[in-house]
Length: 357
Image 1 (cartoon, rainbow, N blue to C red):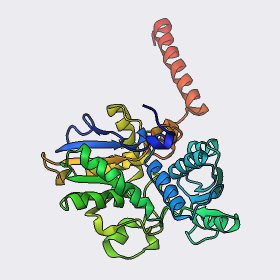
Image 2: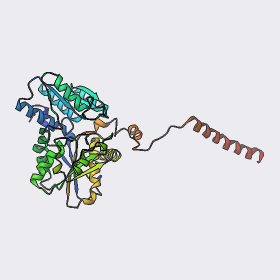
Image 3: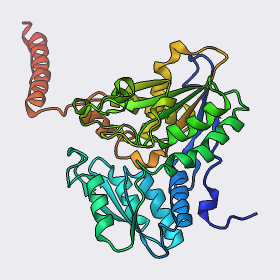
Image 4: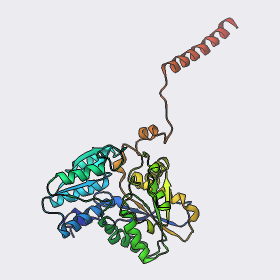
């Protein structure tokens, strides 16, 4: 058996029991490991599906340019699909995207435009606005707009949801997933809720994002917005793909806790997954008091750890963020004190031995 091209290998990622990291948690905890996709993330699913739907509708013409605003993973998947299908690819990313992610995008042939992360979405310098402007300026360009393109959620409704239902043999009781564009969370949740309305859908959000507050109140609160480190979840806009009515609970997780859970997954389970995977795992720990021994919890791990070697898997970066202990280099003054103390002890011993003092 062989595959027609690499896009045909997308999906059917494994659902893996978490043993050591989840040993003190009630129920059966399972990780849906999206790093097994050819582009090493769940975004392979939406890149292929959105492009194919745009082709079918006639919106995307042969030889056209595909434009997208992305945190990195969607961009890699889009660049991969564009290379295979013969489209040019222009991606806008925020300055928060890791150097590894940006290098990956460029290695796949994409043109990458880095935009400041601190600006408001409507600011002309934001990565959303820049993508829209590029799509207007480039003849024949098509803006995928993953936040507002409902084919994003559709990809997960048709693939991730059915996979989880089949792999868990219909026993799944909780689905835990990070919320960003809302596609992975909402598309999968819609399918699962149709199968069993009692399945609990847990959305994971970052401190600095507007999603949880909007789910609670229906209010878009700019005061919620502030910089945060974890990538792949949270938003400073309200995406059309985010079906808030399907979510039973939103959990906010910290940058620090997410980073440590990420490293634990690698060390204890052999799962070299990304920063947002740690966030999703941390959310499971934060709902542990709600779980029963008979529960089956599926937690989605969105991407591979190789894109975070300079961040959560780098001790120096972790120290800079204050996530692990900081070792301070010994100052010259400290060295002098140490030498003085040594010689003082030796001199006192000499005096006692020779002069009897």
